[in-house]
Length: 62
Image (cartoon, rainbow, N blue to C red; front, side, top):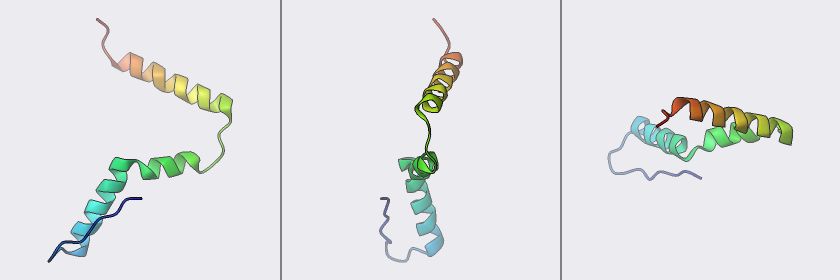
């Protein structure tokens, strides 16, 4: 769970901005979206294979 501590004279907007940044860095929202619905193992394999192909196409070969 992401938490931020308010410092002296810190307004709510900057505190909220820091919290959102921390949540984004920890990948909490993407994890929640991924777990929102059950994903069959075959769909999971297909998604991982597509991600692997995209990554290999992006990196230049030597």
